[in-house]
Length: 165
Image 1 (cartoon, one colour):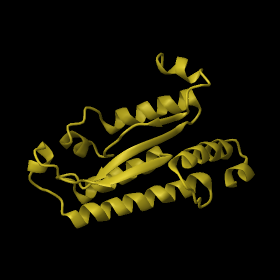
Image 2 (image 1 turned 180 degrees about the vertical axis):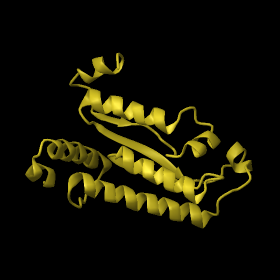
Image 3 (image 1 turned 90 degrees about the horizontal axis):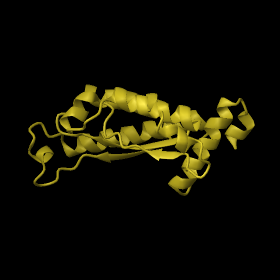
Image 4 (image 1 turned 45 degrees about the horizontal axis):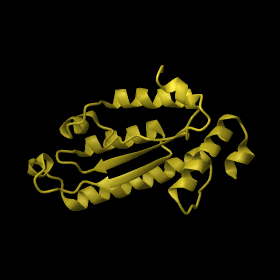
C-alpha cells in the first residue's frame, strides 16, 4: 500500500487500471508460465479498490489455452465473476509458430476455444448488467469505464436513480 497510497491521493491519476489476468485458473496460469496466482491477483485488485475507492478494473482473458479442461474454464469464469471487472477483453487462444504453447500436447479444438470465448463474453456482459442495474448500450470502452465507475459508486452509496442513469 505504501506505493499505491501516494498515487491514490493525486486527483490527476485516472481511476482506471488494466491488469491482464490471462486466466482465472491457477493451473492454466502455471501452464502459461505466468509468475502470479489468482490469490495474488485478487489481493492486488483489493488493494487498488481500497486505495482508489473502487476504480475501473479491466482485464484480458484467453480461453482454450492448451490443456485447459472444462473445469479449468469454469474456474476462470467463476474468478472473472468474483473480481467483478469493469470490462473484460476475451480472446480465444491462437497458436503462434515457434512458441512453447504451440508445441504443447493437448491443444484445444478451435471451435471449443471460440465457444468458451463466446460464453466468457456473455457472462462479462451479464456482470455489467448486475453492476449497473440495467442494460447499457455504449459506443466506446472509455464510455463504458466511466459509466461503470459512476454506477458502482452510486450503487454503493444507495443512489439507485444515479445508478440507473
